[in-house]
Image (cartoon, rainbow, N blue to C red; front, side, top):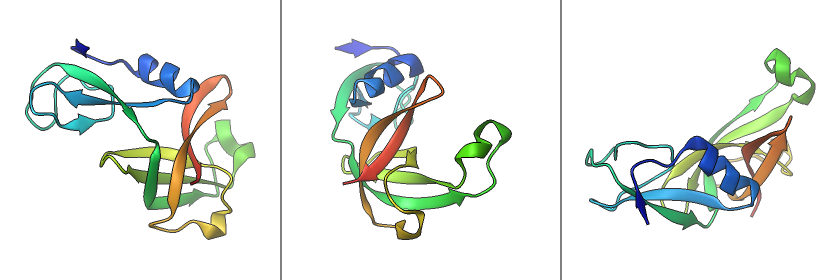
Amino acid sequence: MTETTVTLSQFFARAREGRLTGVRCATCRALAIPPKEFCPACGARGWERVELSGEGTIASFTVIRVAPRAHAGEAPYGIAAVTLKEGVSLLGRVVDIPLDALAVGLPVRFRPLTLKDQTAVGFGPA
């Protein structure tokens, strides 16, 4: 299936179901995380949905100790940039891993999170 765009709402609707979805350019085959209107590699329009494994490793992380007012009661918590085994990167909240155990290279797996009636991307132990 090829479509011109994959919306953010479609991405998060699938995440709520526990499925992490990427998009592959129909022209150059580059893989990306939606939403994308144009391929960052070749500028083409036209995407194919790709199911991603959700498995990856932490490439970078930070611990939020003083959170924005809307999330103040949740601090401290971790946020990580994760490189999935398919090669794309995604930012998400770290769950079920002690903050002092966070490390670059730590294997993690995608976990859908619902925070205040919104779906978010989370990563927990692999």
